[in-house]
Length: 302
Image 1 (cartoon, helix red, strand yellow):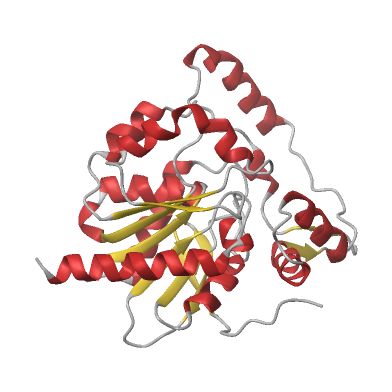
Image 2 (image 1 turned 90 degrees about the vertical axis):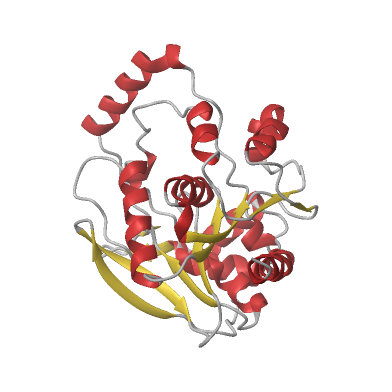
């Protein structure tokens, strides 16, 4: 048994920066536009549970990042975050060319959304970060070893192994995300995988996404970008459960990161790990509803 969506998204494709990229659209006429940005190796349609929970109160768009979901894969190279940021800028111009837009970013999607909001503050009306607060600060003394790992990864391309069945993938998802119910896990498993011509089940995401970025992540650069964000912010985190490895990795600097973003309102969803939009879509939708009302009220007073 799998999850039955209440609102079926429409699919659209656009040629952006040399690739054919896919967009999910849960249409709601005359409602505020909301752009949902998924994380690393995830896909747009995994926001289905949140879209259903929002109940038609938003005109929702969710792109598949290049090399994810139904978007095209790069022929070579690696998935440079700066180029993905340029993709995001193109999506905003397509979806809302004349007005700022609400954004929600999960994990990597939140990191890129915050970067965009700092670079183009006039284009973002409100920004909710679902555990998209940056990763561990990179060690500049690791630069030589990192460059070596990057080049070796390009020279020795990997291939996905056979995942077996969607049921096996769903079971693995439930193990990693124990608050995800079986029907939702089956839905996500189907969304993340595809059958090859030889009958193997593999992930849809391009395995080149696993090639490490050549330069270390610099928290100081993120802080500098965040200073330019003008949009109202919402910080959403899962409870520090054993399976939330993301927050565990940055726990020592979590308060510092919150301060660098200007200490925005914080929502903690106790019964969720890192994959909040899978494990706690109702709670995420409730937080976004309150946030949208507060931003709308703020704008109406200006």
